Amino acid sequence: MDDGGAQRFDDLSPQEVRVLGCLVEKEATVPDTYPMTLNALRTACNQSTSRDPVVSYGDREIEVALNSLRARGLTRVVHSTTNRATKYKHVLPETLELGKAETVLLSVLMLRGAQTPGELKTRSERQHRFKTPDDVVTVLERLAGRPEPLVRELPRQPGQKDPRWIHLMSPVAEPEVGAPVARAVAASSRPVPPDGVAGYATIAEFADLLAGDLWETVELVLLDVLAGLEPTSGPLVDVGAGTGVGLAAVHRAAPGLRVVAVEPSPAMRVALHARLVDAPELLAATTVVPTQLAQANLPDRAAAVLAVGVLGHLDDAERTKLWRYVSTSLRPGAPCVVSLVAPSRPAAIPSLRVGERQVGRNLVEGWTSAEPIDERSIAWTQRFRIADPNGLTLREANATVAWRCDGVDDLRAEIAPHSLELTEHEGGVVVVRRRG
Image (cartoon, rainbow, N blue to C red; front, side, top):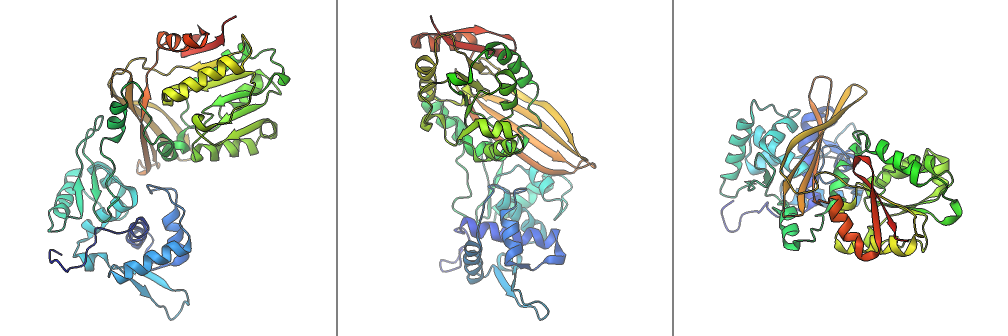
């Protein structure tokens, strides 16, 4: 491949990468249905587990990718005398002169993005068993040392114990190294959450399973401050409603109160809408606004505002919009309930186990960690794992976002120019109100 006229394999499209990775994976994991039909390949490409990113390709996109891969000598069409459906197979090892271990690692990188050797060892078990992560590194170094490298090691990022590796089959394979930290530092006092919506798409499925007792604390405050609110006084605006886990608490505290739920993450809204469908009283009372706060068209008047576990995600412009809204659209004394999330100042937080939940025979576990970015913000990582009864990892997911740390005094100073004041409650909950 070092010949100037030789075929290049470093410019595959995302669709070609996904199709090729799926063909390699399914050959090892479901050999009875390999080679694969177009329908089976579409299902494999679009599955929501063991894929990063999750996609929704149609037949046309996959057909185009298959034709291109075939022209490049990476796939072949298989015609069966017993089945009229056309089937497809990969010939990656033959074309690139790869061994079994090399082929497997390349496919896992193509399907799941940048990963550490330990993650690759775990995630490749169904295709090939490596004894140790060091064995994985040996194969990766062999792939990286070719005349035309197929993988590359990334520099270790803050908060990461081990470096990650990426494949080089696509020009978009490499993530923006250090993006969460770099963008936040560049913004200095206004750290913008880096790709936060996409991050929560990765971990949304775990949001309710390991939510902890936060809403038990918040509900005690809601029962106090929402008591006596008339439904005619306007809706409650829930900023960052997430999966809607707090809606039942709102309606217990103020029956009949309408809710405007602002939630930008499509993955979180899937759970939110499912919750509404299962609760007719919530469905009738809840309007979902599918945008970030900056673009949200809020009602002119509101009875209350709720911002639970979201303040640290908001940039300066969104915070200003929030406090202006509270100061102009709520009547004096009407509550804006906010939960402040520790730490109140940036600090290095080692990986801490935040909980576990048994789901049938599988165990879901969660961890959190953080690294300081600047004097007000952290790179906050949430990591989750699903394991079967034998301890085998079935799925892992993690997301890192920039998070602005706030203490009560910080918030008090921030809201003062808007003629707002706050009262403290237990569990990091504060209530902001207009003066007078």
